[in-house]
Image (cartoon, rainbow, N blue to C red; front, side, top):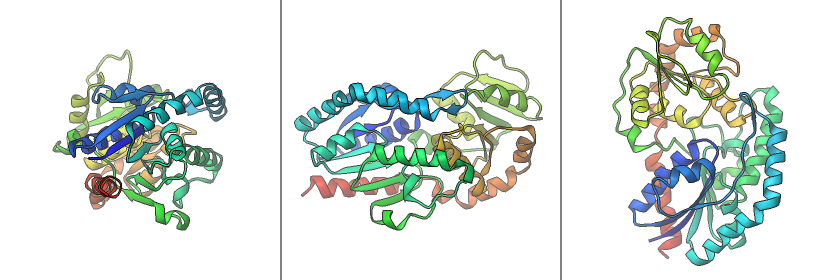
Length: 355
């Protein structure tokens, strides 16, 4: 049996969802996992696991649908100047008593630092790792956003023994990273794997940013039926059915839809592509990961993206759905990385806990 420390970032739902799957697998093999999280990750993972420890972590500052880089830096610099040592101390004390064989970080910042100080083998498992470790393609105008994201990724992850990156696109790994960087398909929930997808006549819409109002005004001009999540204080019509958040209902609507309109989040991208659904993406401006997700979505021929949606582009998207579906079907083997990642985890246990 292995003892494993697991740090999980608290921004967005992707880190928590992915980590839950991995932790459940490790526990199913009899391993003991001590979890550290904050904000959304602490709240979410505490519902499923007993040993979840609360720490603090970085937060993004938004203005409308854009990340404000300068304010994000100021807020987190102030926070960590005040509480950084306290959070580091929480993890270090747990390391001393728990005596982990190794640690995993899903874009969390204090577990890597505590492990380096205590010479604990450290592994990263997330989606953001492609930033800086691969030869990414992106628009020239995004270079400043890329640089900021690169610095964040390098600072968050620290030097690791191996970086496991999950993704639906696979840019070339840089030479300097090849020995310590591996890419896999998305890690999917059992609830997703157990669904049988079908092609219904509705379009699934999931938008939680300030672009929701504009997207709503645009889809009202289109001749399709929509099932919409993330919209507040809206009454359903013959054209648009508004629903409250519900995991089971949402997955049913996703698995049976004809296409998806959403932001730039990696988790929904992964699940939609696994079900064979084309995606129209509206990423958050200045959040480089989402922008790149949208860029590669379009580059791979799985859908379209726009930082500012228009009726013309939405119309183009719906006209192209047969083409997008063929491309998704062509690459369907790339959209499930569970077994490959689990094999890597088994190797880590054998390496560190079965000596």
